[in-house]
View 1 (cartoon, rainbow, N blue to C red):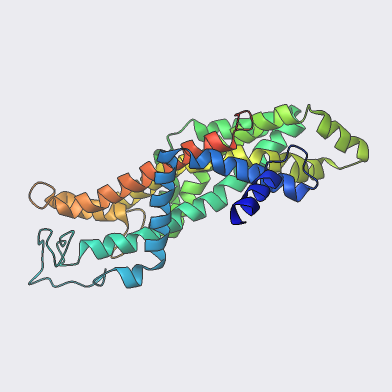
View 2 (view 1 turned 60 degrees about the vertical axis):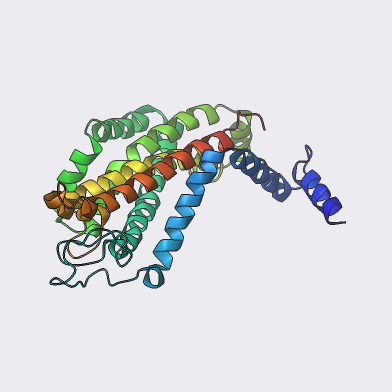
Length: 305
């Protein structure tokens, strides 16, 4: 009986003639999930990111020691052991606990940059692509100015103007991250605005802003989501670079880039101080790249399911 219900539910989702918009939306989501689930590397990336979220949420319970306090006399620069699996730093603090708490800062940066940068790029790109003319030229020239500078160099300039700190680092990274999303949204909009669907909406009497916000932007979201996911690795590396240079999270915050900066003084003899946060950055960046590749295959409207 359960197998029959699952089969009927699957047939309802995969129907070529959906009876409602809800059924059509659920069918598209189910087809995208099937495509995504067949990609083992993408599933591995999703698992690592979910693990990062769980670690960040339950850091208080998972961390064996305080990330801010250590035993400077007894536990300074101890190698990995059963007591301290990742070793200790120059202040006697447990590196595993600091890496665990650092996942919160990494997740904070990633989420805030995505929330700030993606909508800006999406709005700028869709408005430029739909309006055309001088509006398109002006917005795209501004976009080109941002794209002309390397992201880290431009972020350094903004952080230098705003002042060091994790909040200012997030703002600086967000300001430098939106131009690629605007380019993608504009390219999508140039194709969408010529369709019969948009012509029909115009005939109904919809205003340009309504067309952009309600009919064009939703169609561009999937491409922007894919690009945002693929950019997460670069965002994490930029945040780590700012922390490494002392312009991001400030001591004693356990930000991964700052941990590597602290460990560079002991990298030859006490390698574990920098190795653990470096491995964390590598794993999370790789996971976002794998997830982005999987989403690109799953959300591609031209792909066959």
